[in-house]
Length: 274
Image 1 (cartoon, rainbow, N blue to C red):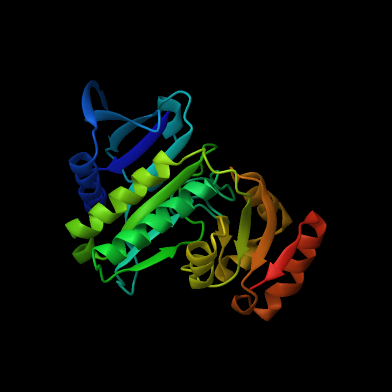
Image 2: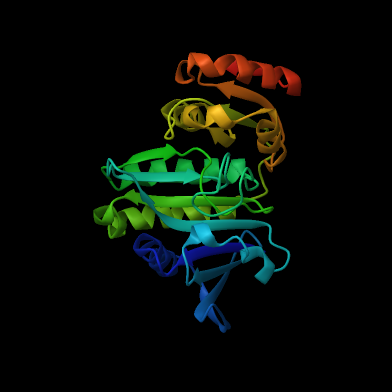
C-alpha cells in the first residue's frame, strides 16, 4: 500500500491535496485518520491512501505504525527558503547529522530514487507546459522523519505567495501521482550524490537530461559530520541498487576532500567527479 500524506499545518500541502482530489479519482471512505477523512484510489494496480496529518509532516516519525504493508510514503509539502525563490522540489527525508527538524539523529529514510526522478521529470514538464516561473530542483537529504520505508517529499515553495499558487500546486500534484504510478517499475541502478549546494543544479541537470537516477544527496555543508558509516547507510537505504558515487568535486571544500576520499576507499565503491 502507498501512502500520500498532507498536513493541516501546511497551506501548500492542503492546496496540493485539493489539486490531487480535483484531478484524480480518489474516493472518501468511512474511516478517518487523526480525525481527518481518508481517501482511496488505485494507480497501476497500486492501492493508495491519501491521509492528512494534524501535525507537521517532518514530525511524522511514528506514521508507519498506523499502517500495514507500506511500500512508499509520499509527503506533499511546502518548501521554505530565505531567498523565497519559487521552486518545485523533491528529496528524501532524513538526518545526516543531528535531528534539529524531526526524525532521528544520523538516520535517513529509504530513498525511492526512481520515483523521485519521475517526480522531478513531471515537475519540469508541467513547469514548461504551464509556463510557471519556477525553478525545478532536487534537494539534498534533510529533516525528518527518518523512516525504514521508501519515503519522499514533493514540495512547493519557497514563500507564502507560492504556497497558495494553484497552478504550481497542480504541477506538484501531478508529480506526486507520477511517482506513485511508476513506483516499482524501474530497474535502473542509482547513484549517491555528494557535494555542492543544497539545491544541486548539476545533479538535477544530470537527472533531467541524462536520466541519471539519484537516491540520497549529501551537500557540502554536511560533509564535516559525514563519515563512512553515514555514506554506507545512504547506500544501503536506497531502494535501488547503488553502484557508484558522483562527486560534485568543485562543490566540496578542500579540507573535506581527504576524509571523504578515505571513506569512499574504505567502502570500496566506485566514484567519479562531475
